[in-house]
Amino acid sequence: MNLEIKHIEEMDKHYLFLTGEIDVYTANKLKDALLPLTEQEAAEVIVDFSQVDYIDSIGLGIFIGALKSTHKNKSFIKLVGMIDRVRRLFKITGLDEVISIEESTREEAK
Image 1 (spheres, rainbow, N blue to C red):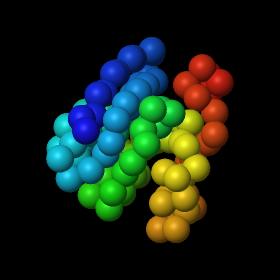
Image 2: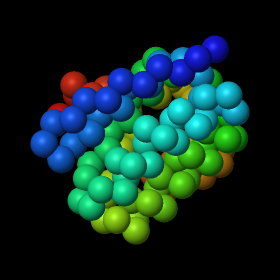
Image 3: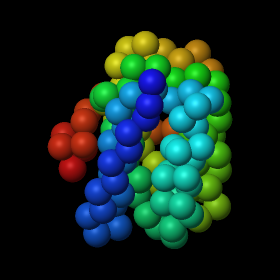
């Protein structure tokens, strides 16, 4: 499966809408879209997971890298709209304790 990424910028907020699967085949595409946004000082990056039905350990690693980048650049990342199966992986790995995860979608996060 592919991963589609739609980016919308509103002021210093960046919304990434992900559709598909995040795995070894799509991880570089996600990394190329996400990391430059987290490298912008004081940027807020909101990633909508509502159309993501699978993520593997490579994909989780992308978000660890993004989190490190936000700390370095005083930016912020929030993940929204995860289905239970995907959210469970973040919980099992403990990433839900270090990355802001909300059940809301982009529209509700405003």
